[in-house]
Length: 309
Image (cartoon, rainbow, N blue to C red):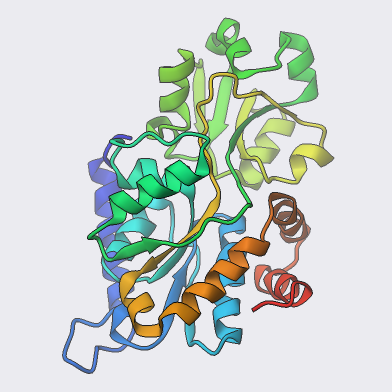
């Protein structure tokens, strides 16, 4: 993956400064403060609803387990959240396995569909960085290229490679960072040799992208495979026939300091939550949030139903 551009780095620095300015109390030993400076575990989410739900699931499980938890929701894309985790301004991030490996290795490691191999590679990348990747959940959420059923019929689209003959006349919609992401436009060009007529920056698999697709403002959208609207609106997911998308199991990344402070009991609790989370459940949780329910309430009910922690 390409390193973040100057604008992304400056924005990341702004987020880090903002977090530091409103962060936790300074450490008792005279440290610089931030999330690592107190006994609370600061759980962060990316800038889309599913990430909010995941942060609430893990954070509330920790709270029920007797830990003090603080939430930092909607920090932004990975270019913002991962620097905050690296600096200890947040301490716990529910990540996605393959994308995390590609991003944190700066493109030196290329994830595959083998979740065990990807998790092992991520562990090696994180070694020495004071961050540990706990056990991945069965639940996965990968990028999905989606068209309407009308477009699929009109252009005879079944798989991503079918786009080659028509991409030059199509408008593609997705998150603003898509052009430089290895599993979005950059990867589509590299693996499938696709070049679209236009790219429309929207949101990260959210309502703007969905509305633009069904409203005919774009021809093709990047959504997430756990998006419930794909099924309810009769949208068509194009098969990734050249294997661009890797294993994307939900994987908690946590600061080593937190593990050292609270030990094996905390690790077992987090791993128990992960073990209970499936892709179908995640899709159902997303449906409830899309219908207007609060992510915290949705997460709480899921934990109660599964007797967690």
